[in-house]
Every structure is written in structure tokens, then in C-alpha cells.
Length: 245
Image 1 (tube, rainbow, N blue to C red):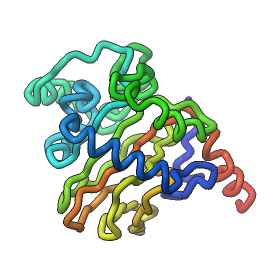
Image 2: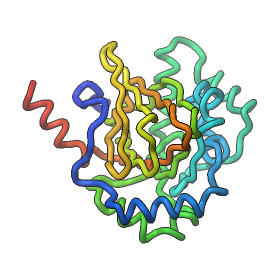
Image 3: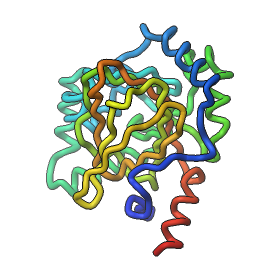
Image 4: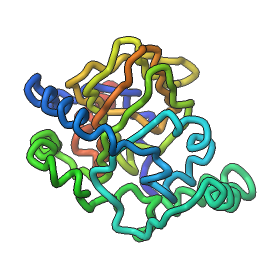
């Protein structure tokens, strides 16, 4: 079993070796403006992946939109909310431990769309802006898999949830358009940490902790969201923690 890394890492941290300069940030803004009509709800583009976060899908994903830049190589046919409820009922049967183990198993199967590491196929949208996306992704040391442009509407929020331990996949976001009133929350050892993410910076998110986002501003927030299938980009954070302890 892979060793859990959650408690060896901060809730979030700026990655100094990755960023968007003003020119690249401006290109990203133009890209988003050109792609406005392509933003869709997660259930429209993620299908079965949403079933591992059934409650989140119902409560938050109607104000949360994305454009997939990579797609899964696994079978990912269309499903409805009703079908998702049935899948989630099966996954949630028994104790919380049984449910967690069942979802974890599905998220590591090689040919399952619930496995984020299967998102390796560049979409047509990615190919249209390939030079721009490659310029940003080329800064990472690890291997990007699931890549998205994400929109959170003004006044909307993402309810508290846990995604996965960083040992499974490393989550990084780079804000493109984000007002100071948009706040990321992390629950770490019963303490709530509130952080505003500044456009252009690349932030590691420890999604093993419960976290949420609240956009108090009157403008939509846009981010470039990346999943990495190894820990090369955060090894220095692990090293620092081990040195301290």
C-alpha cells in the first residue's frame, strides 16, 4: 500500500519553479475569452468520475464549469444524475471504511475513468492552443495527466470535501483571473486556513485535507488545474518536513 503523504505536506504551497508571467497570463485570459461557450458542468465532461463525489456533484457542480484539456483513455460513456445516484449507492453500501476502500480501488484501476491517471489524451481544444499550454506545462518536473480550465461563478462556492491523498496524484492550480475576495479554505487538524491564490502563481493543493472554495467576489474565477501522477514537483516540501521533524 502506498504511504500516505497528507500529514507530511502543508495545506498548500507556492511552487517557485512554475508560474505564468504577465505575457503568458494575458494569453490565457484571451484563450478563456475565446472558449467561453465551451465551458460545461463536470457531469457533462467527467461522467462516471463524478460518481465518487456524488454529493459534491449535486451541490456544487451546477456553479462550477470546466473545459477538459485531456480526456481519459478508459470507457467514459454518458450517464445521468439518476444513474450516478445508483452507482454511488452501490459504492456507498456498507460501512464508511468499506465505501472508501471500494472508491479507492476503482480510482486505481487501469481502465476506469475514475482513475485520474488515465486522462492522457489531448483534446481538440488542447491541440488548438498547444503551444500555450505546453509552455506552462513544460515547467513541471512531474507528468501531467488530467488538465482543465476551470470556472467558478461569482458568488458561488465548492462545498467542503476531500479528493485524494497526494501519494495518488498531486493537484496544482494556477489562477488566471481571481479576485482577492475568492478564498480557498483548508481544514488542518481542526484549524481552518483561508488563502487567496494570486493569478500567475502555481499552487500545490493538499487535497488529502478537507477543503473548499468560496467566491465572495462579483466576478467569475478562472484557473488552470493540473493533476500530476508523481511527486517530483513537491519532493522539496517533503524533504523540508522530514528535515524539521
